[in-house]
Image (cartoon, rainbow over all chains, first blue to last red; front, side, top):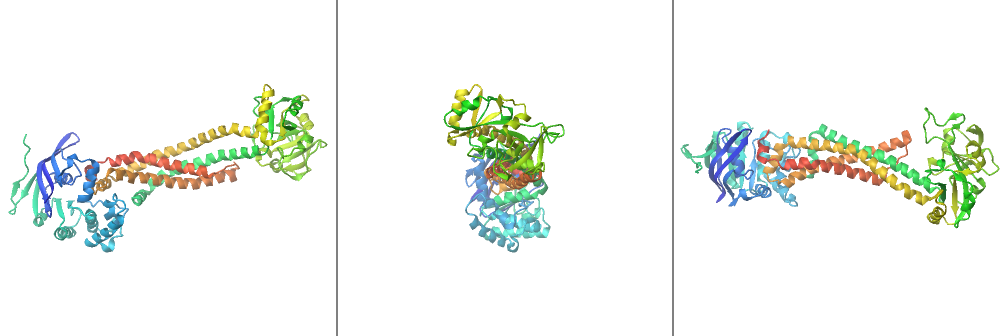
Amino acid sequence: MTLIESKKVTKVYKLGMTTVHALRGVSSQIEKGDFIVIVGPSGSGKSTLMHILGALDKPSEGEVLIDGKKISKLDEWELAMIRRKKIGFIFQTFNLIPTLNALENVLIPTEPLDGEQEDYRERGENLLDLVGLKERMHHKPSELSGGERQRVAIARALINDPEIVFADEPTGNLDSLTGDKIINLMLNLNKEEKKTFVIVTHNQDLLKIASKKFIMKDGELSKIDRNHRVRKFTEKRTK
Amino acid sequence: MLKLSFFNLFRRKTRTILALLGIIIGVTAIIGLVSVVDGLNKEFENALGQFQGVIIMEKNSFDQTLSKIDVKFEKKLEKIQGVKTVVPEIWHIPTTVNGKAQFGADNVDLFGAIYVLGVDTKKYNSLRGDGWVGNIIKGKKITSNDKGWILLGETAADDKDLFVGSSIKINGKKFRIKGIFQAGTDLWETMALMNIDDAKEISDFGDEFFSDFYIELDDPTQDKKVSKLINFQHGTEIEASSASGFSEQYSPIMDNLRVMVFFIAALSAIVAGVGIANTIFMSVLDRTKEIGSLKAVGWNNTQIIKMIMYEAMFLGIIGGIIGIVIGIGAAGFLENAIGIGTFVSVELLLQAFLFALFVGLISGIYPAIKASQLNPVEAIRSG
């Protein structure tokens, strides 16, 4: 089942005087249960692709379909609704709210859904249990280690039971041992909870565990086959 | 979300405190200044409540000390229906008391100065009400035989250390104190009540003029009607005003004064509002990334606006409450340490609080809209 599909997506933005072609016609499909890893150097456009696939941004050209809906047709409110219900995000810098404790941070995405807070509270506690932070759910982010903070962020990404979780360099700010634990946690969630993960990173090691592997270079997405051969995947725009 | 907004305020304590300080000063100023106006207002109301009759003054004379009326009106007024007693009065502000000038370069205490009121004591003592003088706390009333004797207000007596039996020189003439009275208000308690002939002697009133007449009516509730009748018959030369008419006349003036003082004080709160807007705007910029991630996890613009508006609202509420507490203290200080009469009404506290809340909310609007317009992608990428 295809969750998110992109068709010839381009993204052009202006950075001062220069025009940046961040994406040059990317077509891709994310299927339910995928564990996708996209590698690529800094500035290759992999974060931009993740933002567009995650309904945070709209493509300049081309189309993104989430559950068959064209996101270019949706307004800000509807996009927020899609992000809230269908998509979870994990960031390199965790992006937790420093004044709230772990559990409250996990519950942040449910805030708009007034009146159902109590049901979510139990779910939040269970999720923190799942990521191994049951004992520390009333601690503030400043009292948690980097790995623990990222676990909180993972629990936050899962609170609304999304179909797909996007992670942008989830291990980038962690030491390798802690990073491995976080990746293992995501793998387990993929296997046991059937969550779909899309991870963008420049850590090539993660390719080993991916069910689908891609490389991003200069705004073009290529598939990596079993023999680690790179196959051009990006369709050039034809005019 | 309320909790989130509330705690957000404490992330930059110094900044929040400085923003709060502005609004606290504003609210304190409102309460301090307006309570003085309200206090004055109350004093006037007490003073007016003192008499229930009608006062006849020279037309357009503003007050009794500036009025001069021909003595012939005494008889004319007595003939008017509903009039019971007509008391001729001479109001005079003496130039010297005990040999010292009342008003000079080194003495401009308008409220501390002694007034002279000369009345026809026979008629005055027959009044049903207390007239200008309240209850006599020491000594006795003066009668028409008491030439050279006065009744003195308690404030003036305390001020000059005078007792029943002591003497005081007014405009060079020596008087002795027969009694000391209390009135409902300080305004009347600096008065020296004497026989009208004594008052003529120390002032420049001859036999042709009085300052004014105080009229007691058969039915005090008819004061407006009788005033109208007098104004109709003799309105070219004299002017009759009733107590209720007085308060109707001056209350719009007091109301305007109050509004004016309120907004002068409120100016500082409005300036504080600019400070709040700046504080919140800075904190939005600081939290760009955080706001971006809130959007990423599904918050829509309305929720972002709400969060920032709550912060502004809390600033208004906290500033308002602290300002009220300090404002009440300031009013108490003015009253007790400096001696300016103040009156802090619940209405005033409510107005000051609502104003603080209003300023807070208004100053939150711009930063809140700006925060909601942040592009989530750029917001996340930043910092």
